[in-house]
Length: 135
Image (cartoon, rainbow, N blue to C red):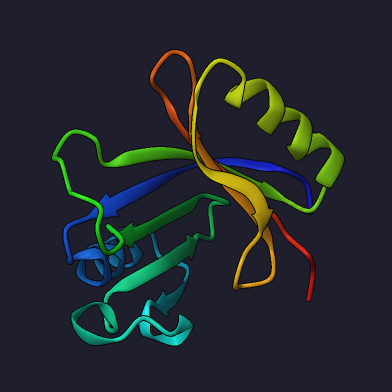
């Protein structure tokens, strides 16, 4: 897989409804994972940790409900996501994007098996980098 650049939308508990709406608009395959699938109990268990819509036109749209403890702020609901399996390329992007910025999640192996990191670059743009570890 080549590296991809695509939008990542955040929602205040309405991610499933929104992503199903986008699926009706654009068509394609929607994959959804909940916080509960990764061990989050209680009210967040059914909320969306990650959703990914792959459309017939080649668009990729990702989204999630804001995680526990993170405030939803309308207007701050989009992040740029870089993903793929070219670890060297993606780590290079990460290093340059996070330099002079603020890292909220260090680029490291996560519970779903991939390397993942999140930062806000020095210009205030939020980024996520996910390095796929394959199947």
